[in-house]
Image (tube, rainbow over all chains, first blue to last red; front, side):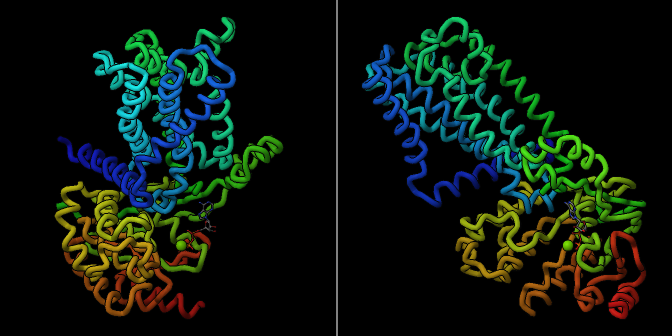
Length: 255
Length: 246
Ligand SMILES: Nc1ncnc2c1ncn2[C@@H]1O[C@H](COP(=O)(O)OP(=O)(O)O)[C@@H](O)[C@H]1O
Ligand SMILES: [Mg+2]
């Protein structure tokens, strides 16, 4: 293997390992916390929409868990990525290592936590009488990869742009809370009035979340949705990379 | 074998003034025409037409008052910025000696930070592990190496940072006013180590406010003031000129 490639892989691995270590160093319940937060949200939404509003979705608890865990990876990574270059200012200003390793490592870190929470989803599924399907074996890895592409794209975009527009952080927080409700996490797609559906599918998280939900609840993997997700993933990764490579040489100046 | 060589050819560097943007979207949008205008024109020239060369094994000192452009020069050499004009060429691996704890994570132990830092500076994980013992030995941190580095004193951080940097098999060392922090013993040890590296064709750029250190470590020196070269020559001559001026 080419020495430069081997080093790049080591760099990303060490940075990811660092994030993991730091997370578990500060709280040995690190894993529990990463599961507890979306689980608690699921409880709240369950109470609000199932118990009070009496939403007509079967297995609503499982439905919520599927969407919320997926969403959590998205929102955590974007929040961390927004400030990832700022938080590593002293390195960026001194060492000419490939900067993309930083957002990449933090997306990998959250992705790993998402993958580790899949067993928890399986347990909740079992409680609802839904047992692991063959389709999960290929469906889940494919979806994780598709989601990774998309999140990395957004991650590169916000991490780079944030150095030049410092209050992007707040904007991201606000946008995330809006996009959350424009994603079918607490409601099902077929409840959305016809004329808004196309609009919702412009949201790149929609085909991903819908696919996860159908896979986990019914064992069906929707290839059409996957192709749409791949398209969004590549588009946003392209945009993210383009913005990053336009700005990378100015990072050290802007810090 | 790669030897450390630096060529700096008529380099100028101007910074765009990002302050309007840093102030945020609101002020950017409210003052859009003037903000765009200021982005176009308001540039601050931190270096103007600087040229010099460093041969393998040579050490050059950069001296000058605060804001003269010394750190800017090092950033250009480190390859984290591009010059606005002129060209820079360097050969081999560049090891910047980072300021206190830069790139270290406070909650990780000295040992964990050594591996992480060495990899960031260009070693593979395996090479970093091979150098590990030598790094710990040189740092003299002993049993503290297992402690989280937020418990380290500034002297200990400098020792750790220096030890990692000199063990990354560098061809070029960049030093920005950090070595003054360690105790006398470590200063002596680090100067010896630098001399040893230079005997192995490692070249060095050394920024310092201490003329004593510049005389001890460097062959030649460049005095920069307001981004322009004020004087060049042997370290002793330029240091003397700088002292008599100040
Ligand atoms: N990123 C930056 N953006 C704008 N101006 C900068 C930046 N970095 C340094 N400067 C300015 O450039 C000049 C030289 O700075 P620097 O190279 O840090 O000086 P020194 O290290 O000699 O004290 C200073 O006036 C400083 O304010
Ligand atoms: Mg400086």
